[in-house]
Image 1 (cartoon, helix red, strand yellow):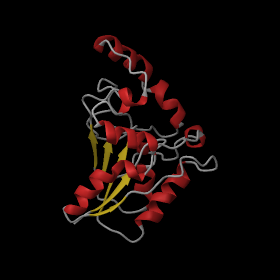
Image 2 (cartoon, helix red, strand yellow):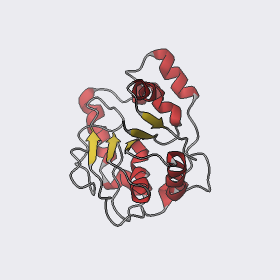
Image 3 (cartoon, helix red, strand yellow):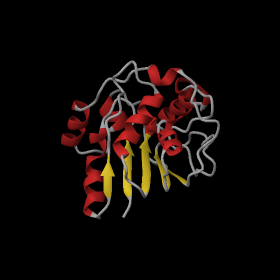
Image 4 (cartoon, rainbow, N blue to C red):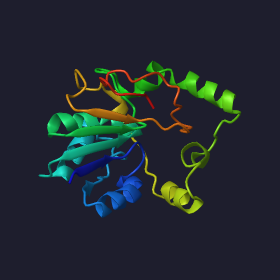
Length: 197
């Protein structure tokens, strides 16, 4: 069986994955879902990756799954430990040398979101409408309660890898995602990844 390494996005925690974690464990897999130091202003992407590697310990047969901003951390983990598969779930795909804070402008995110909002006739104005519109209300409320502050520190320095790691990579495109419209440009820098968030 595999060991799944689940990396959450910005301003979140390992709890984000609790339902998937339970399902994977029920199927006999090992799972680790660490809390990244997102509320620590002294922590950059290197510290995020170190947190994940420490949580992995001596596990093998790794499948690394990263959501959203976790897409900046996951490839760094793949450079530090042997990984069998990398899966990006609506993941932000970095380019070598690109500061994560520049990703938004470099991908045309704002224009794509405006076009989606105009086409759909909606402009989500709160976290539930934007991120949790298809989640049961009690679960959405718990997710908001568990949210954390997100330091800007990991967005400031250039992404350190010179190329995407040599790891089989898959991308899950979320068709009804209101935050990362499916129409965003194709991934830049992730080899043969199929789609951008």
